[in-house]
Image (cartoon, rainbow, N blue to C red):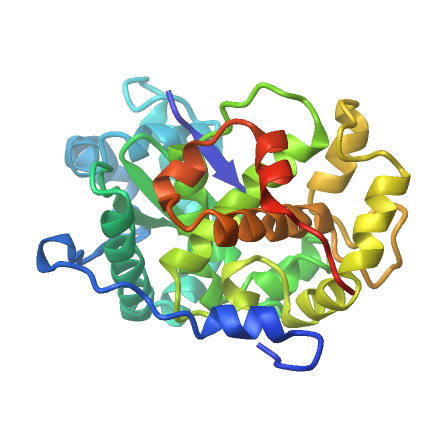
Length: 338
């Protein structure tokens, strides 16, 4: 069973490639591929229920959210909807004063999700164009008490609105969220975070190699796909890196590559060492403090981009299904020039 939970353009002389990508002309999509996404407001359905209603209304929740309700119980560690204690635990969660205050503030900020629906509709339209045999998930919003930003199941992708209340939201400071993550806890990242999570689960890394190269190329393929699925978005929104971080990596690409070669990182199979380079962090280990965490993933993207330029006959789906990261690197001709 597939389950993934996420705790989730400035042009210059040094930023020419990213700016050119932002102007990439999107493909024309046939009418039968057009998608209209509507977000199901799970949090409204749950928080509008009173404790004495919940037992009677549980069946309607299960009917409307058959898979998501089970996952929500797992998120909060309150059991399965079939368990007798589930309704009691859910009622306690909804009745909690602080949780309800957060819920009310999310409703003020997200009284409407039309902008998110528009972004997702456009993105899933491109998704249906590039992946005609793939299903379109239902989209759900929720409030989980700061437990999860994005949740993905077999048939749904959900967003925790309380994780996108803005970098200055007081609860984030009180809960000591990492400072480097807060700038990305904004409204404009919702659609791209949801699509990235969906793509990641639909096209999991089937190459069993434990080399760092394998992981960074796989994530680079996902980043490349995001460029195709959000052709009108700035790289600073669709990549998960800020414009400043992208500028730094663009300017220092050759230095980053030299650093990786000198330290023999590409073919390193040490899991704990590789994790340090792949996980979110204030900066990348061994690199300047100005470097973003996960810089190696951006290098993976640059390798993938070089490969696709040399092999334009490769479809997006074909790219995501390629298993041999060494072949991609060798066939890409990747060579940073700066």
